[in-house]
Image 1 (cartoon, rainbow, N blue to C red):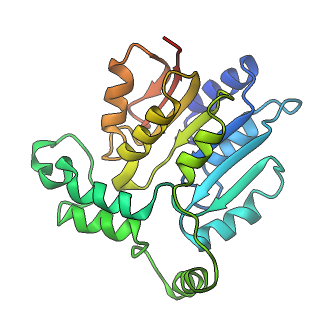
Image 2 (image 1 turned 180 degrees about the vertical axis):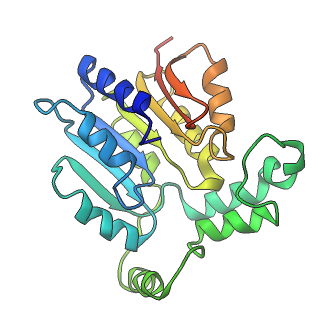
Length: 233
């Protein structure tokens, strides 16, 4: 997504023609991907008031804070985008994961017990090394890990016409999208989806494309992204 020239030009045009004061992003990773792409696409004389970006891995969050320090409006947050018990229940009940053979055109990270794979992802058990494990132990032992940050931020800025970018954890993209859609209701906002060919957001893509209250600005199936505007009906 971040390396696609059409995506960047779409952002430049969007920010040049619309006053966007608040951005809410899920999935910071190291801060060198979509976060920097959006941050550098804003006009230099009209940056947003706040760009919140949420990362669940404390090691990645710490690195991202360093990588994003030159943009004072970017506010990296550590914690869970949705409450962990809700995320785990969603994954365990997801019909697509339980019957993934019915969705051959949807990319799923593994077909070998995908419910367990995405459960492990939400629980922070994937891709660990000694450093990440040590930082996780410190965070879990001495820090109060925030939960449900996506809903809290969207609720706080629901009347500010925010831009919401969902670069979600693999198993909960549809849950995050529903959280945004249902919380903002009939209010105007901007939406960016990443990995629209993936389990993350293939349902989110279908919902946006079939609802009369969304206008698709641009998208790329090849690079897996969509930018849309939610309209007041």
